[in-house]
Structures are given as structure tokens and as C-alpha cells.
Amino acid sequence: MTYGGTGSSGPGAPPVGVPQEAAVEAPPRPIAVAGRRPFGRWGLHIILAIISVIWLLPTVSLLVSSFRPEAAINTTGWWNAFALPFEFTTENYFAVLTRNNLGTSFLNSLIISIPATVIPIMIAAFAAYAFAWMNFPGRDILFVLVVGLLVVPLQAALIPVLQLSVDVGIVGTFPAVWLAHTAFGLPFAIFLLRNFFGAMPREMFESAYIDGATPTTAFFRLAMPLAVPAIASLVIFQFMWVWNDLLVALVLVGGFPQVAPMTVTIANLVDSLGRGWHLLTAAAFISTLLPLLVFFFLQRYFVRGILGGSVKG
Amino acid sequence: MELETLGIAILAVVVVPLVTIAYVVIVEWLIRGLSEKRRAKVRPWLWLLPAFAFLALYLLYPMAQTAFLSLMDRRSRNFIGLDNYIGLFGSNDFWITIVNTGLWIVFFTAVTVAIGLLIAILADRVRYETSVKALIFIPMAISFVAAGVIWKFMYDFDPDAGTLNAALTTVGIEAQSWLTEWPRNTFMIIVVGIWMWVGFALVILSAGLKGISTELLEAARIDGANELQVFRNIILPLLAPTIAVVATTIVITALKTFDLVFVMTSGNFDTEVIASLFYRARFIDGNTGVAAAVAVILLLAIIPVMLINIRRFRAQEAMR
Image 1 (tube, rainbow over the protein chains, first blue to last red):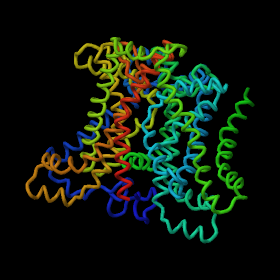
Image 2 (image 1 turned 60 degrees about the vertical axis):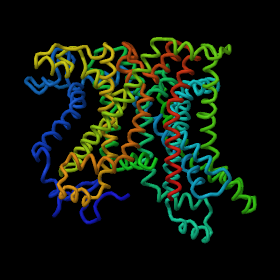
Image 3 (image 1 turned 90 degrees about the vertical axis):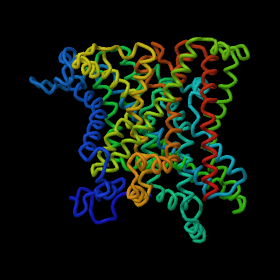
């Protein structure tokens, strides 16, 4: 699967000639085809505009509200922010970051997410490489097991995992969450990477081995660099999944505010603040900031990961 | 305290990943003494070892143990046979949970796929397609927790806060309490799920749509087929496999839904679904036996999807 144009026009370059070349994901059909429609061109634009507004409205309401003073939020709707007097403040953000433990939680979310992304992907890459390019008895059956585990709900394992973490004495610490996320993220990572490694040309590995490469060199110098697009999608996926996870964190570190990630802290705030919208909206926006940045800058890999994981799966 | 946090951060971001990467290098060093033939035999198992150790310790063994715990009492002390299941099937709350889960599976899946398909087909005809798709996809990036907060705010009873009630009161309808009455509350939470997941359906269906040849569609139109006929007789059958994949993924999501219900109603007002019932049973009621039984039921519900996945995978492998 290839994305992007075929070269010349760099990112940010003004569209020269055919404007639809600018579309990243897939070039639209020739526009001429779209001439005769059941509800004309204007109808089409209006429907799409309405859908877009509906989809954007909740997020906009969150963003606007998070910058409004508490007094304003409690008396008028967020849409009044655009009428006089324009009252905006960053007080909600300071308040929620310092007084409600959200600053610590933000850091915790990072400390949880980074290893919980790197460890499973590396471990999955080893296994995926073995599945794709090594011979051993039971290979197919073991891989079918991995495919089966793809859809297992983690609830089916959570109680014993909690018990295990208690027994080992890591409940309420970062490693408890790292290890659980590693295990739960493995099936998808192994599946995606094995398919990606497996699609690489056999001759490439054969000639490398003839030149005296060991499997370790072939893995680090050939397979991994060529798998960068797949790994990038996987990194984004796993990171978002861990960053956005509530259940695992709630169960393993839920009772430990100094270790808890943002999702847990915000879920607690929803309970304790009730309708304290000025704080809740700011908190929710802080938690979405990083996923949104990742999404806007790495959208291509994100979409590719979804396509690779689902259409093939 | 601060220094300790910094230490953990460095451990987390630098040391742990490095150790992981070093694993295969160390393994190769360990087996350097063996003959090439024996190394080739041992190596795959060593490369698989970390992954399967995790899968065994954190998924396979716990699944078996969950099944066992579901036959034990609330503190896992005495064997009580199927009593947990019998208790569940005899309770009203459980059946409401099952009905809700069914509503999630049917409506969440059907509406998400339908809207995704509609937007995919409409957006296919305009130049700003990429922007529309990106915009619809945004909610997919945020957490269920954040989405729960956003929509609790949308649904707020006070028309001076909740957007939905504000819109209703503007046209003269009185403000509604969206999240307290069954079954309306379940549908309102499903709407949030739809808002988040349409982007997913859209992206995949849109990619599938691009795979249908323009000539085919044009030929049908030239032969006098109207748009509805083109959709029913060409697009729909050709997209059917893609729709099936999207629908399966969304059904699994429906079965696993927990966070949204937890944040929006805490499972009150009869909004409980099977995955949130699991949490309530174990972590609020403290009944390990019942929670394990709920987890087993959830797993059984997912097994058909698992078998479909395996069969689809086998078919793909055969085509390679």
C-alpha cells in the first residue's frame, strides 16, 4: 500500500495543476463523474457540512468551556462565549493541574505509556520474525493461537492478573501496568508484524545469509528498518491504547493517586466534582491533547495501522 | 520524591526499552557454543520465549483460572458449582445487562456502519474528502473517559450548560434528563460510542470503496441505473466483505464497552452492560465468583467472533 503523490510536489507546496493530487490518503475520483446526483451538488455539500458540524460540536463545546471563567460556565451556555463580553481564562487549567493532581497524572500517563509501548512491540517483533522466517514444529498452530487471542476481552484475565500482581508485590507500581499492557498488546503486535515481515522478499534474506549475516543482523539491519511503516502504526496504536486505557489502570493502580494515569484521575474527578464543568472540561482537554497531536501529525500511520490490522484480519 | 520520579522516568523511558532490545543479542551470545544446526533448532524458541511467557502468564493461565474461579464462592474459598451462573440468570439486573449489551451490539454496530458508509460514499464525490474524513476521525483518537466527560456535558440537564437541552428549549421542547431513564439512557450512551467509532468505519469503508472500479460504476450509470440501484446492486455486494470486517470489530468493541458507562452513569439507572457488570461485581460488590462468571459469559459471547477470525485468517493464508 502506498500513500502520497509520486514525488515532485513536496509537503506544503501549493497545488500545481490537478488540485486533488494534494489529497494524502487516496486520490478522489475524477470530479466529472460526480455530475449527476440524486440531490445535486449543493445538497451534497450541505449534507456534508451538517455532518461535519455535528461531529465537531461536542469537541468545540469542550474546548470553549475549558477556557471560560467558572462564574460564566455556571450561568450561561458555552455558545455565549462568542457574545460580549468576551471572557476567557486559563485559570481552570492551572487549577486542575495543580490542585487536582492532574499534573502528576499527566507525567504518570507518560511513564506508563512509553515502556508499555516499546516493550510489547520489541518482544512481538522477535516472535513475529521467528514466525515469518524461522522453521520450527508447531509454528502454524501457535500462530493460530495468537490470532485467536486477538479478540479475547481482558476482563477474562483481569482477576487472576490482579492476584498475581498482588502476590508479586507490584500492585500500585508502574511495572504492574507495564507488564499487563505488554501482554494485552502482544497478540495484535505479533499478528501485524508477522504479516509485514512475511511479505518481505525471501531472496533478500537468503542473500544476506549467504553473505554471512546472522539472524540477529538480518533482524536488526534488514527486517526492522524495512518494517518501519508497520512499526510506526503499531507504536501509535499501542501508545493511544495505553494512554486512553481506564480499566487496566483502575484495577492495578486505581487506589494509588501518585501512580495513577490521567484517565483514572479524571474518572475520579467526574465522581467528586459532579457538575464542576470548568474543571472537568479543562481536565478532559488536557488528556486529549497528546492523542490529538499524535493524530494530526501522524494521521497517515494511524490510518494505515487501522487498515492493516482490520482488512487483513 | 521529585528525584525518585525522575529516576523512574529514566528507567521507564531509557533502561527498560534498552534491556528489551538487548534480549536477542544476549540470546545469540548464549548459544554461540552450539553447532549451526542446533542453533537453528533452538533459536526460534528463544525468540518466541518472551512473547509466549507473557501470553501464558497474563492471558492463557488467567483465563483458565477465571473459569475455575467462576465455580467458587465470593472469596474463592469454597467450590459452589454453577451457583454463580444460576444466581446471575435468576437476577433481574443481569437480564437488563444482557438486553443493554444486545442493544449495544445491534444499534452501535448497525448505525456506526450505516453512517460510516453514507459519509464514505458522499465524501467520495467532493474535493475536500480528506478533510471531512480527518474531522470525523478525530473522536477516535481520544479516550472513552474524555468522550464521556464531553457528552455528559452535552447531555447536561441545565439548558444553560447542556447543548442538547439548549437546542430543545430553543424550539420550545422542555429539557430532558437524558441519562436517568431506561432504555433512553442506554441509547444516549450508544450515541457517544457511535460518535467515536464512525471514523473507524469510515476510514476502512472508504478504502474499500476506492477499490471498486470507476468504469464499473459508470457503465451501470450509462445503462440507466440510478444511484440507489448502483448502491444496492454494485457497491453493497462488492463492499460486503469489508463491511463484515468492520462490523465484527465494532461488535467486539460493543461487548468490551466499559469506560463510557463507568464515566457517564457508573452503571446506575439500568445502563449496565456486561463488561461494566464485571467491574461492579468484582470491585464494588467484592464478589470474585460472580465477576469471574460474568467474564466467562463475555468470553463465550466473543468465541464465535474468534472462530470467524481464525477461519478468515486460514483462508487468507491459503491464498498466499
